[in-house]
Length: 297
Image: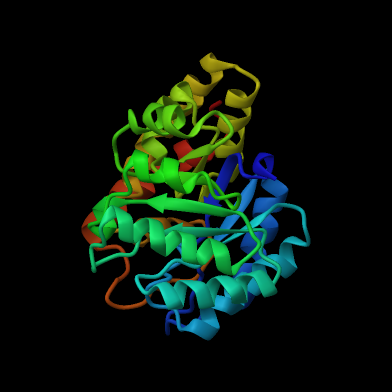
């Protein structure tokens, strides 16, 4: 089961109309594109999928549509985290019933639990479902840092199989693996640090950039899997400018604008997020042809 959660896993955007309504045909088309491009997995309704502003019925429908459209071609990891344990349990049970392959569980945001509270929260979710659970540590968004020793204690639960590590501290990979053992999966949560995290034992990435460059991100991860460090470095260097461009404003503002420029989605995002500012559009658009195109590699 753990082997399913490696390589390039896209943190999929939720495409929307200009009105903010979810664009279901565009979502289907994005899933098809990722299957064709060699993406190794899809996270449905994570941060990049605007989980914070989707209604519960929309949240679950996005998961369901991804499962149905992928038809088992790649695993669907459902983002079902919440800062209320009961809500996280509810979403997780629903996602399991919809056919998700695993759950991505972000640390509870805003209410700043202790490490003991984090452990109790994740264990409650794990006890409520039968699916594998990937923890998600992103303290820059949540004001809550899931420490390696807490991850180690959680890794003793049979359903807690890995972590998406996005603390910005590359050394955490080594600390987590030393505490949890080699059987535990560490995934990069920051595209620009992925190659460095690979060198320390990470086996994949949950990627924003994969939304616009799925083949290249799949090739990067494939090179790592076969031990071709020179190819990893070459592709990584090619992608670094686009990684940076994806965060010129808060994610997913830039990546949704890029997909719009590529003709893959309409201009649609929900308040309090707005479309990319005109001041930053030129920066991003000037990179797209050279970075996303595979001709230069």
